[in-house]
Length: 522
Image (cartoon, rainbow, N blue to C red):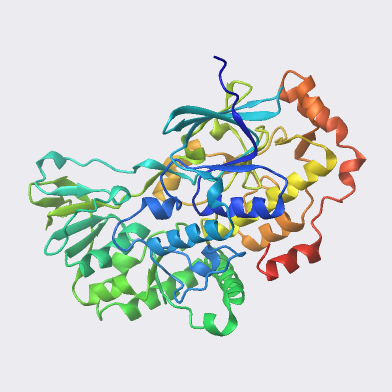
């Protein structure tokens, strides 16, 4: 019996988290003639907000900017728990009828681009076994870290420890906390979230950090939101975040002093702020840790949480011995030590059978890999809400696909010029970024190869900038099918690029786009 032909779609989205659902909503609305399917390896919508279930899990961005602009967040709180975010994403999928487009427990294993056929062939592990799909375009909304494992250092003596060691990425639902002594190892967003939540659950908590992080308190409710509405609140928060980030980069000493002053005001009198909450690096060299309503500082003030800044010498039967000679007793140790970055969700990508090494590529506008055709990567901001950039990416892809359809083009690829200077994609000193630096694509010094961590710059460039910028090359179906390799097809595309690509008619009409967004429809 002949093997059934693979199902074909115009666009395959990998991942049904906040990026994938948002993209599906955009494509369904703006590309009604395209067939779209979402492949999700897990059993539910939500991505990050379904995976992480440790106590206190919440967003470290406000929901007015983390939420979708086409379905504004209208909840009372701006900083909310993970379950509420997952529900919001799921309700958005249902409201926009994209939940029916999702195939759960479909884990993408590999994707191969065929120049001869101008399409992707995607191999998937599904409940019924191996499956295969084909697509004209592949949209990776799989996040940037490994869902199967977190970053977990090993320490001497772990086998001697009589208690339990837990990683937050795989929190055991049956874990009892009341009356337990818990040591949380870490100083990042997960640690500062866990510590007060564990104390509230009845544990005695010590947050053990090798070095401090900047911790900033923010009200969980936005007092202005009820008066000015969600869209105005969103723009207020966008502008304030951009101002604060720019200020941190241009006047780091002033921002450091201001953050220290805020911490002093929230912590008990005489608390050693410089030891525990005044890092050696400048603000925003690493992501700041957000705590709603100063919950961590208040738990410290009540004596429910202790912060210890020291290094681990080894585990003992009863807990942890420190390099200073001190010891911490523990029934449970939580290793809030970070995540493992894995771009493209670990999917093995090939072009005409040749493996794509991501680290050898350049990042085009923060959403394409140089030399890889018809592939888009949704990657949000590290200094602001993830959704701000992921939504801009989805809208830009809509613009691009409309232009290609209008001109009868089947293939687009970003080609990096020779001699382009290489810079790290993420300009952060955080441990998880440094560990992953060798596996990420590069950026360069100038657009379109510069990855701006700036929503306002990206808004102008991606919504109203020219699509034909000299780096993107297009080929019609017959050119790609006629030639044996993609590099030759790109050559054909360059010959087409002449004056017709310089007309500027690919620009999005300003009035149309802004008006739709203001109505909450675009």
